[in-house]
Amino acid sequence: MIRAGSCHHLRMPRPLDLLAIGLRARPRTVAELAELALAGVEETRAGLEELAREGYLRLYGDEIRYTAPDEAVAGAVRQRAEQIQGELAERLADLSAIVAQLPALARDWETGGAPGVLDVEVFHGPSAVTDLWHELVADRDLRRTSVVLPEGLRLAVADPDMQATWHDVISREGHSARVIVRLADAAHPEAAERIGQELAGGVDMRVLPAPPSWFWVADDEVVALPLSGARAGPPR
Image 1 (cartoon, one colour):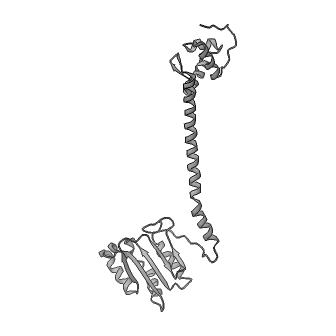
Image 2 (spheres, rainbow, N blue to C red; image 1 turned 180 degrees about the horizontal axis):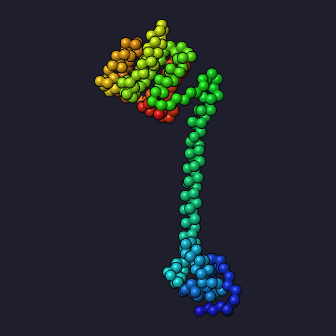
Image 3 (cartoon, rainbow, N blue to C red; image 1 turned 45 degrees about the vertical axis):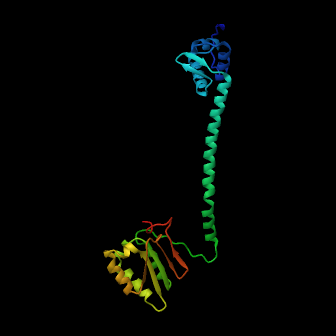
C-alpha cells in the first residue's frame, strides 16, 4: 500500500485526478483513496460518485471497484453520443415543424397580397352560417347562393325573420338558392316542416349521403368556410 505523507491542508480533488491515483495505487476504500489524494473523505466520495455516474468505477458503500479504462471510455463515449443523437433528433424535429408551416403561411401571404381580395370577416357561434350571409346581403345583391349543411339540426330550427329575408332574396327575378343536406337528415321527421318551407320558398334542395363539411358560395365571389378543417358546423 502506498502511503502519502500527512498534510494539514486538504484540497478538493478533481474527479479525474482521483481516478488517476486510484488506477495507479488501487486503494479499495474511499478513506484509503482520500488519504492518498490528500483530500477529505466527503470530498473524495463526491468525486467518486461523479466518476461512478460516468462509468469509470463502481461504489459499493465505501468499497471502490475500478473499471478498465477502455471499457469506461467506450461507455462514456456511447452515453455522450446517445445524448447528442437525442438532442439532434429533437432539434431536427423542431426545424421540421417550422418548415412544415411554410406552405400554409405562403398561401396566406399570397392571399393577403393578391389584387381584388375582399376583406376577411370571422363569425363565431351556432348561427355563423346564416349570420355572415345576412350581414353581406344587407349591403349587396347576392343573386346565386349554394349552401352545404351536413348537420341536420339546422333543418329543424329556423329563425323566422332570417328565413323571411332568405326567401325574399331568393324569390327575386334572376335569384336562386341551392342547399345540399345529408340524406339521413333530410329524411328525419323533425326536418320535414323546414324542408317544406324551403321548397315553398323556392330553394332547390338536394341530398348527399355524407357531405364533407359546411360551406356556402355566393355569385362565385364570396365563400364562407370553417376556420379550421372540415367540420359539421361553424366554430362555436
